Length: 206
Ligand code: UDP
Image (cartoon, rainbow, N blue to C red; front, side, top):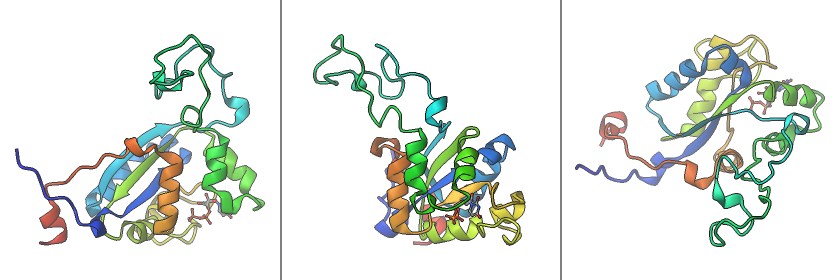
């Protein structure tokens, strides 16, 4: 089979996009994905998850393997086989709790709107995605538009799909460094899929 050439590093820039709970409720997930696909960016990771406040989390499982990583969370881990111990609770199992949002929005924790932002982001499932491509961080911010939906330009995601800053449909990383950090908060390394798209010469030129 044909194996496409590996993309040069400048085409491998990555950014984190969250389709926030209001957009999931309003069935806008496909519209958001379509915009990034249509632009030519490449989807390299995606998952739907409910971020829970501690009070919403079920009690820790007793002798039930983690649904995400299965045996890896049992005491002793993969190397030790499956001992009869109680599963060790790791960040990997419970990454989708409030701590994730506290890290993600660490610059905003002192803002008066932070409690409302937490309530919003935990109000229902959201979709986390990693998009890859040339200049993806800057382009994605331009495609997403102003933080405040009321002033976001028409043609941007927020300008087309939202009305208010507190329900602004999407998140996108604001710099390459932030993107690297944020991707690490939301995804395990092995959840990113490295793949080469066959249309690269048509999308970027030779
Ligand atoms: N936000 C809000 N009220 C405000 C400002 C921000 O609810 O007055 C929320 C909004 O959901 C925004 C998020 O906090 O997207 C993060 O704010 P930031 O300034 O980082 O904007 P963004 O990078 O999302 O455009």
